[in-house]
Image (cartoon, rainbow, N blue to C red; front, side, top):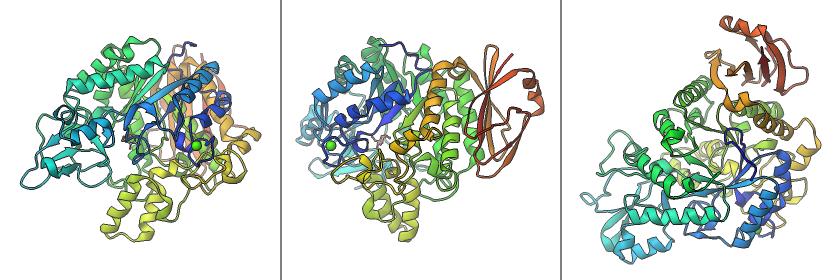
Length: 556
Ligand code: GLC
Ligand code: CA
């Protein structure tokens, strides 16, 4: 294996179901991923994060695992998987697998045995008696409704923080933890080089289950009491025993203090973490299911706090805009109608120049947009469908709900990758499991032909991450913090500086180097990357064009 420092690595996320269908049943699969490895090699990424392909009833597209040791036949076979690892490694690309251990599917053998009344397996889950004929607590599921499901024959409820077919595991049970370690080691022994732990900061549940009178219950189980102990043990018993394995924890509603602990190397927990605070700036009053503009100053404030906070505590972030749960970033924070190319490139630069390991979600690298579905029948995602019903009950009109879904639904990022100009965008020759988006001309074939495409911009961002120590190692300082249009920051490493300037809006605006930074003018400067022809060489004052983005490297 080539030696990659995870600070210099770029991870590419594949949602296999929507990536490439090799056998024309309408569902993407592992052989489809193998077919496209040369494309990924061309892009230059180091790791592929594959979202779950294990046996699953697919209520939550694979995040409801029924059998952790086997591959769902819609995605392929173990031989396909082994071939994928081998073929990827030939191209110096390594695999990162999604580990879903907060919950299992209710179709898993463990849960089935629990439902038969087997005490051993019942104790793998969280079963509790109700209170006054009601659920044990008033907590709500992240997908809407109560987080408890009643089981008549036990006169008990089981906990599910997600869908009712995703039963939460009881991590306080040592047997459960041992099962989990065995599963992880099984995949590591196959040559997997990275692990992503799904909603891992929710695994430590409180000793006492009580009503949440001021919230939905999350404060009782998020970053819970034993979380660091469990992650340390996980490290010691599994990936800590292997060389060269990188890990990332998906952290729901977390905070900087805990994330430092999760990732400061001294703690021996994880390599890095995802957090989502920056992706809530378009939630009106904290409500995801609202439509409206994003709050730019809040976005900058969050980046500033997390970048500086994690740096101070020697922690490490994963940095990203997109994944399979988030709408497409150019539709969200850019302008996919008037400035698709410019805004997609600007957003890419803004995130890739940060301190942290960048993650690219399939399709982002050539500017895929939201699909703009117009009917509820086009949506497949369990959360979207649940909320469609909840919003209906709350009295919102059909039009209003569809508008909200077209901005917020997780299906916005789950539409098939548009490979070319042929039928079904080259994703499948069959009938796609989910409809292809509306902007079909945004596809890989067109992107590869055009040297000004978003694809080549991302390729260059990745090259820069590999080459420039200042990008992987430098410190972070925001400037013009209260400017309402520009997100600008300075990175610093040894005798070098990086000045990153991004206009987040579709109008011209003026960048003026702040007075206290005028000393930067004494440096020799060179432009590393930009998204327009003839970017200004002088950075004391710039008339930025719509969504213009420029990165200067300054050397004394
Ligand atoms: C993570 C996944 C999401 C899934 C949830 C429950 O947030 O990204 O897709 O629904 O965990 O497993
Ligand atoms: Ca298929």
